Length: 355
Image 1 (cartoon, rainbow, N blue to C red):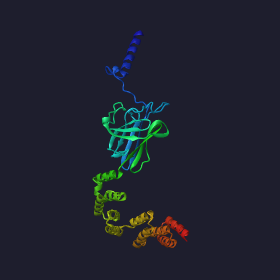
Image 2: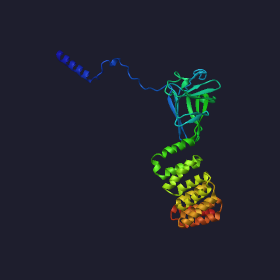
Image 3: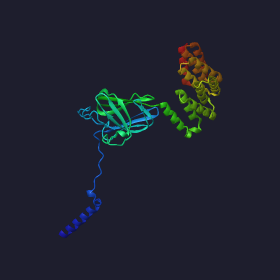
Image 4: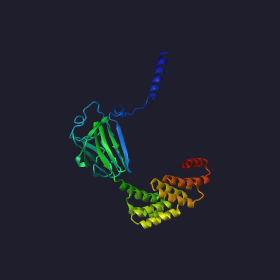
């Protein structure tokens, strides 16, 4: 029995050794990989699109924790990382103006120099440093001044991008009971035009719609009119239709050639479909041009006398003008042509309010 016990113990030890993981020689002395754990100052990103320009701020968020922040944890008259840990990083996808000064598109390390009354905001070309410990003023891309103001209490440092418009936004640092706003402006029209030029180099160049859309955007925004006119001409050459001719007419008018604009507008109505004319009439109604809309809708009833929808739209325009008699006549004609049950019920209800 004793010999049997020793044999059994040997076999069990062999099994345990075989089941154990193989550890490379010297591994016990190697440095273990660090675990990923929550940061005391958690990371955050805030972003906003202004026109076509993407603006973002990435930063770590320290907390007040009952400490004195301004002139204490964050000393006055010293460069501060404007956050915690690594650089606070601001990025712009196109050129901007910060505090009225030009700044190229790019990625910047954000630093600030607080004082009791006025702050200096620094955009550094070095955006991958650890905080401000290696800050070098020769790497500054831009410095602007900002005025701190009292703000709502924020336990953790926060950046907001406030009051965005199509060309501006206000980047604001908020921490403790202080807010530091910095205005950012974008030449959105220039950015969009540059983008349109690039887009028209792609697959869209083989279709009339992108050329017409690009020209229409320029016309609506009163910019890049000469080049937009060439885009409109290209769209017309590819497909002469209501849309392309209307855009061409608009650009001709904006460039001062009213006779040519009127000619293109007349041609657009001559080639328009019923739906296109109807849509144009409602566009005029939306602009408050009721008489012009009535004229367009009357043209549609003449060109498409068997369409109930043309008379329905004309009735709506007359009702908008306050001409109840003409509105009732148009709705009655629409009712005589329509077959759809829901539309008939709607028109009958409208007629009842007019009579």
